[in-house]
Picture 1: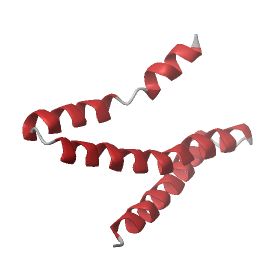
Picture 2: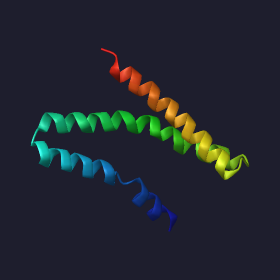
Picture 3: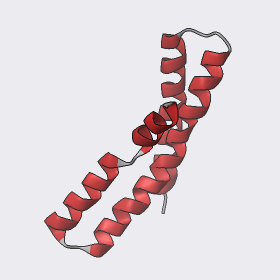
Picture 4: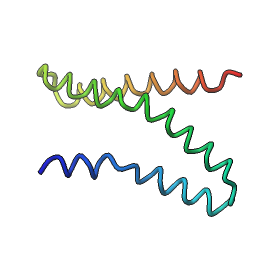
Length: 88
């Protein structure tokens, strides 16, 4: 069923691998926790992709236009969140 495909696709495999690798390379719990927190803040803007893409597809925009537009919105939000996180 498509729900199982969605569950598998939504698993944070890259994040789990990065967190595990960082912890075993450094053994530092604080640095590892900081990475996990940073990932959380970057997940939030990435959700925009999954809102904009189906919205455009359901309104009969082409696949490429929907993909590029939703990726652009996501990139802008990444830039915004990154700049907000960099401010003291």
